[in-house]
Every structure is written in C-alpha cells, then in structure tokens.
Image (cartoon, rainbow over all chains, first blue to last red; front, side):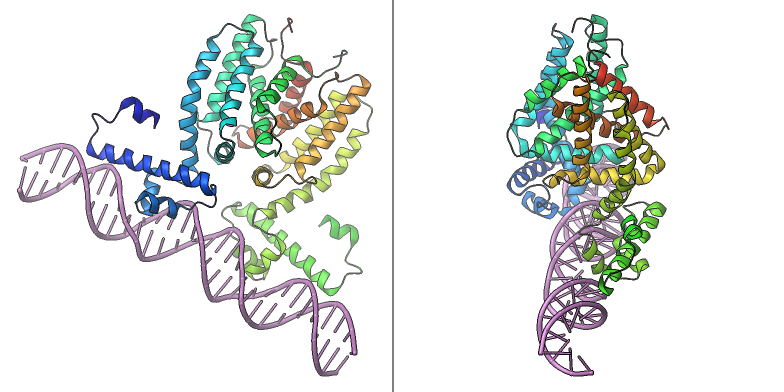
Amino acid sequence: MTLVIILGDVDLSLREKKKRETKNRIFEVASRLFKEKGFEKTTVDEITKEAGIAKGTFFNYFPTKVALLGYFAEQKDELIGNLIKEEITKDIPTKEKIKNVLIHLAKSNEEDKELAKIMVFEYIKNAWKRPSHPTGRGARFASVMIHLLQEGVEKGDVRGIDIQDAAENLTAIYFHSLILWLRSETDYSFSEDISKKVDMVFDGIGGSKS
Amino acid sequence: MTLVIILGDVDLSLREKKKRETKNRIFEVASRLFKEKGFEKTTVDEITKEAGIAKGTFFNYFPTKVALLGYFAEQKDELIGNLIKEEITKDIPTKEKIKNVLIHLAKSNEEDKELAKIMVFEYIKNAWKRPSHPTGRGARFASVMIHLLQEGVEKGDVRGIDIQDAAENLTAIYFHSLILWLRSETDYSFSEDISKKVDMVFDGIGGSKS
DNA sequence: TAATAAATATGACTGCGGTCATATATGACT
DNA sequence: AGTCATATATGACCGCAGTCATATTTATTA
C-alpha cells in the first residue's frame, strides 16, 4: 500500500496495474476477514470469493496463507522503520536509545494487539524452517541492535563484551516479552515491562561479589 | 514408557493394559517414522497403519498430530528432571548452578538435534494459543529459575532485583539460543554459548558509568 | 450366563491448504 | 490487424488432519 501511494499508479503497464489491484484487493479483504473472524477461521476460499478471483490466483500472489501475514508485517515495518532510523541518530545514552527503539516497537504492537498476535506467530513459524532470510524481520532487528551496541562500546556506554551475544540476548528478551504480553489477559504496559528488562541487561543481576 | 516400567503392568484391567499397549505402539511407530522421514512427511495414516489400528483410534489417544510431540517432550523431561533436581541442591554459586541447569538442558537437546527441533517447534506452537498450562514445560522452567534466583538473593549472589523479570530474561535467552542453535548449520556448542550468555546476564553489559 | 451399560475402535466423510494442467489475457513484433 | 510468446487466471483435483455416527469390545449387574 505504502509503496503504491508513494509511487502512484503512473507509468505502469496494464498488467502491472492489474496485479497491484489484485494484490491490494486480496490484502484488504483478508485484512477485514482476519479482524472479523481471526486468521484460522478465515479460509482462502472466502478471501478469493470476496475478492472476486479464483482460488488458484491467490497462490500466484502469496505462496501460502501465512505468507499473507508476512506481507502485513512488511507494511507495518515500513511505517515504523522511519521512526527508528530517526531514533538511532539522536545523541543520548545507549541504554536510552535501545530502550526507545524497543518501546517504539512495543507501541506499534500495542496499537493492534490482535493483529500483532497473528503476525508474531507467523514470524516465529517462518523464522523456523527457512534458512534465515538476511532481509527478514529478525535480521533487521539484530542489525539495529548490533549497530547500537557497537556505538555504545565506542562511547563507553557498553563494556567490551561480545556484541553478537549481547544483541542476541536483547532480541531474545524483546520477543519473549512480546509473546508473554500478547498472551496475557491483564493489560499491563509492554513498554514499561521492556524498559525494566533492558535496565536489567545493562546493570546485570549479579551480587556485589561478582 | 518410563511410567510403564516403574509401575509395571500388574494390577491393570484388560482395558487399561490394552490402552497402554496401543499408546506405546503409536509412540514407538511414530518415533521411528519421525526419525526416518521427519515430522511433516509422516502422516497419521502411516502411523496407524503400521501400528495396526484405525485412523480414528489415534485421535482417541492424542487430540492432534502435534500433541504426539508433547508426549515426546514429557518422556524426555521426566528423565532430565531428576538430573536437575540433583543439581539444584548442590552448594555452589548461583551463577554456576543456573549455568549447570541450562547446560544439562542444552546437552539433552544436543543428544538428538533433529527430534529437539520438532519438539521445540511444538512447544512454541502450543504455548501459543492455549491459556498457558501451569504444569507445562515453560512453567516448570520458570519455577526452577525463580527458585534459584530467590536462593541467590538470599546468599548474596544475586542483587535485589525483580526475580520474576530476571527469570523471564533467562527463559527468553535460553529458548532463543536454543532456537538459533537448532537452526544453525554450523555445529557450535550450545552449552558453551549459553554459558557465555549467562555470564553476560550476571555481569551486565553496561559501561563503567552505569 | 444372559442382559445391559460404558468404554473404545473404526473408517467413511468433511474441510481446507495447496497444486497443476489448461485457458485466457497481455505485450511484442511484423 | 494478425501472429506468436509469455505472463497471469482458473477451478478441478489431491493429500492430509481431524470428526462422527456406528460397530465392537470390555465391564457390570442380576
């Protein structure tokens, strides 16, 4: 969608235009149905019938039903990506910067919990069997973390530790907390939760002896 | 299996005996087929045919195909549970204790990577939609961590932090690392990896200023 | 032992995700 | 415009997980 708006529809062959229309129609119908009845209870048949296309056509656009969720995620990431780019250029302590990035992500999930649920599940599911896409969500997340940590080391905000491992730990904590939050009934603030946990990562949990 | 061995087959009604036999036959056949062809490529039809039962019977024993993996996990946990109970009574620093527990878990996964892959995936998948079973794997993991951290605080090995959050972080890191390891091609040591990361959790990543 | 109740087994059937050979629409070329 | 090449659309079809009405086996009661 975003892309369509940015580029407009000019200068596209008839084929290209039709393809976009179809893809968008699938996206919009699916989006509506998922919110109405949830992901599992929405069938590809329904989506295609409401979109006025044949079932097979769906699979010309998305290799599987879950891939549709990947597309949802892309759309979302595009929006939030800019906020994060902005954030990481600020001149504030590394810990705050990491917190802010994670809180931005958290807030984007807090906007639509139900959809976030579906999408995160898809992330996990897909992150699974495929040789991890270097352009995928996880990889982008990790590269941002590594960047921030590296910078932190240079500034003296972060000790000279294994950046890779530290990034993995932050990633782990973010996603784990996200999952717990998505599954919880009570409506606590994900942003605050993640903030506390980042503090813990920086300060360590060891006693005076360590 | 373990249960069968412990309790023996004595004192069981004919029905009870047959049920156990059937469940065990399903378990053994499935176990073999999963190793031979993987989880997805093994169909319930195959399992039941080789086990000499009707397809419907399978679903009298396991509500879904993936539930079978939950059973696998239970079997495994039973074995490792004792090792861990032993470990947590030792009188060594908390950090070492936590490391050892995680390394035990890691090693149990290292024994059969392929099966571990399937099982962890199931864990994630199921941990998803159900209201989290208080007796499930994740809960037991968390309760062990909380116990160890609590003890650590009392001994002065752990600072007076939010135990719950710390346990969540350790859980997050363990599972995340496990997933990365399961997905990796290269054969690095999961045990060493997790050990390094636990150090990081204890010592923190913050610079001198924090 | 016969009759009745309750648990378990069975396999035809359903629903859905995904495939594929075939049909149709589009673009390029003359 | 007419012809060919290629991209896209189509829906009958397939495989498999999971259901359910019915049949069979085991337990209970008299």
